[in-house]
Length: 293
Figure 1 (cartoon, helix red, strand yellow):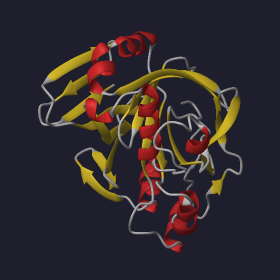
Figure 2 (tube, helix red, strand yellow):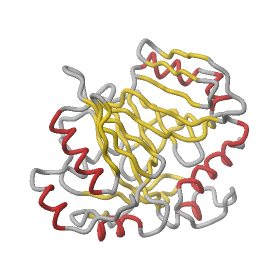
Figure 3 (tube, helix red, strand yellow):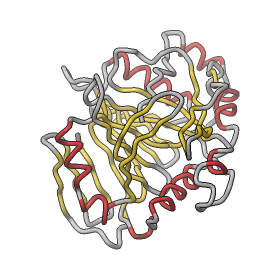
């Protein structure tokens, strides 16, 4: 979904802030989802793939209308994480990673223990259901991440009334805010069992960004409690079963270039699928998949 609000920029004085605050040893956020804007040919190939829809994952083509925007996309749902492909944008190959907590009050906890400069939206983003707008999620706001960047970062928290008001007759019938509960609801709406599909979760993403964006990303994720190591030309940020690799490719736009996924290892077979000219999904027999862009 496109809700690029250009949040959470880390300015030059952020290092001083980091040393002055008490940071939790454990990240309070998880990967919620990511999105990528692809060209029309790639989008059409992905949307038309019977393998993706019938074997790989719980999927959905939908148009979302909320109080912030209206947009259409193709969605691939896992157990705790999901991702979306969009195509109509002024910035092709624009992409973003969105983080969230799994409990109510996660944004406040992040602000109080890790990022005291966060500003939490008082009004939630909504989405339409049966002719009315239901509360969907809150966002965290701060100084802008570089506005010229094709790549963005965000933090969100589901509204406690969301599952109670959005298809309330479907399972799970709860007021929960966890990623798993929300994605189980989406699968229920699609009338598809997650156990019948290969895709489980996104476990890693690689991005290329400029040197200044790279420094900001590293500082930001360190403040969130992610461990930082080096691996050749990559900085590797690890926390809560998610790994973000950051590199800088000369003359390349800032964007997501690779996604690593965990599959149902009991039912995978080696194969490679291509969508458009720049998108390749490779599935391994060991229960892993890599989607490159």
